[in-house]
Amino acid sequence: MTDSLTDLTPEQREAFLDAVQDRLTARAGADAIRPRDPAQPAPASYSQRRHWFLDRLQPGNVAYNVPLVARVRGPLDVAALEAALVAVIERHEVLRTTLHELDGEPVQRVGPPPATVLAVADPAEAADVAGWVRRVAFAPFDLSAGPLLRAALLAEAPDRHVLVLAAHHAVIDGWSLGLLLRELDAHYRAARSGRPADVPALEVQYADFAVWQRGRAAADVRSDLDYWLDRLAGAPATLDLPADGGGGGGSTDGGTVRLALDPAAGRRIRALCADTGTTPFMVLLAAAADVLGRWAGSDDVVLGAPVVGRPRPEVEPLVGDFLNTLALRVGLDGDGLDFATLLERVRRAGVDGYAHAALPFEQLVEAIQPERSTSVSPIFQVLVNSTSTVPLGDRLGEAELDLLDLADPPSKFPLTLYLREDEDSGAFVLDAVFQSARYSPARMLLLLRQVARLLDQVLADPQRPLAECSLVLPGDPV
Image (cartoon, rainbow, N blue to C red):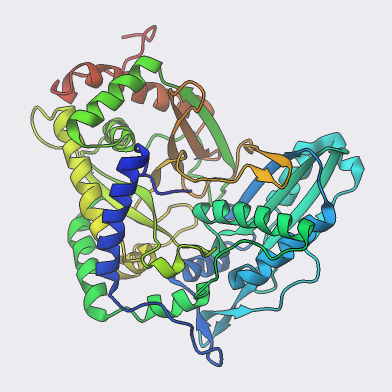
């Protein structure tokens, strides 16, 4: 889960993020984040408050587990790994934080650093590594009892191990995983050498950010909130796609399908982006919006898009849940609407949305007050994301880390569409992660194939009216 508009060249990404940072900082107010009064209870951040609410609504839901699984190849000092994990947890208070209710609201409570944290698995577990990984990664968390981070290690051979780090989303986000791995490597090397770890000093902690976030000037909050309320006024509450199950009933059991785009399509996407000042993510979002609109029979579609919500430089080195979500409304109306015009609508929605991204999504939900249900996520039901932008570490001392994908992870939303770039071929790959009680793999693969079919046509002629673009696939009956 990452900033989905950063799939640019390094130079473009740096310039874009600098601009976004300036706008977020201006919107968030000029006051620096400062250490809180430790004698006062620290409020939960807005995202933590939402996790608290969801946990009360559906206890034991593991869709918000954030697992990282890596195969460690090479020599591994287990004692040094244990020391490194303890050092990282001691350094980042949020990793030893639990949530508790005070006067009807969740507050953070920071516990002492643990003496140990790494669970070393019985070697017999190596007979079913995939099963062991899932049991560790998707065991439920208790937000009040904690801990909200677990670590486990399984030896497959003397020089080959599997490391699982799993945390609840209330204390970590996708961007934080990169920070966590890099710091783990630094502390591991320090434990091995007997020297201090080479990591920057932390000016503040996550709870300080939560206090600052709650204290934002009312005028700043009102400006952002007014934008979103105006932008979403009259938007459909749900995107009703054809389903195969009974609506899910709150189940977050997940399925995954994948489709690789033709390499030529990748070249045409990059060329279109260069001509229009857009990104591959925007092209995917525009194509997905058109196909989803056709499936739902609607010319008004609201899609979610995640954004890295770190509005101040003080929080850049912090582990924590800073992720925010934008609700991007895409209009598909208009006679003769072509893809170039639709792409410009998406670009504008993204740029304007980022200018008002300092408002936590949770505040928007509270203001709109949609009907809450375990089977329907509020405001949007489809998230569109890019998975190519989280810089993760690839070493642990002398050992190499190979990050492993988990098959069919739980799905927070009815449907999440991912765009990623294959590191070897440079081709784009589409993934659909979906709630399997709601949709079948065959239906989701059809969706991806139709998105690819639409892209084939609009990339050849972006001015072609979308109504003239067929979603019928080769070999399908007409």
